[in-house]
Image 1 (cartoon, rainbow, N blue to C red):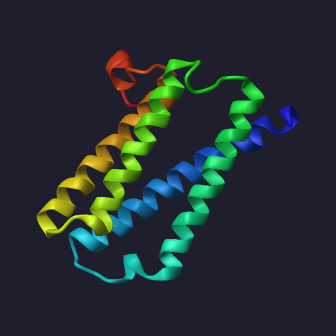
Image 2: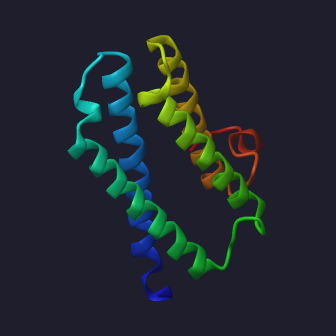
Length: 135
């Protein structure tokens, strides 16, 4: 599997961008435009598929590089923040009772997503706060 490290890494990165981009669009649709399409079954299933590919690639990379959550702190932060992001996203798209609350959860989810990216880039639990830059 090590022979495919770069390909798996590229799939992981592309999946991160696709997942984040899809959430951004769905959140805009629900929270800004009040559209119904973000909750249509094909759009939801696309989101599930992208996230499954993302997590599969992440597990493969973890196995290849021998870095694991709860052993390496930056990965622990990513996993914990991923759970926070999923919960916030769920409230942003459907569970929050008011439009204002959905918008607040949406913005919070986007901030958490951005911080997860900074942790991944820095390989440090403090992410952007240790490097002073996101990219």
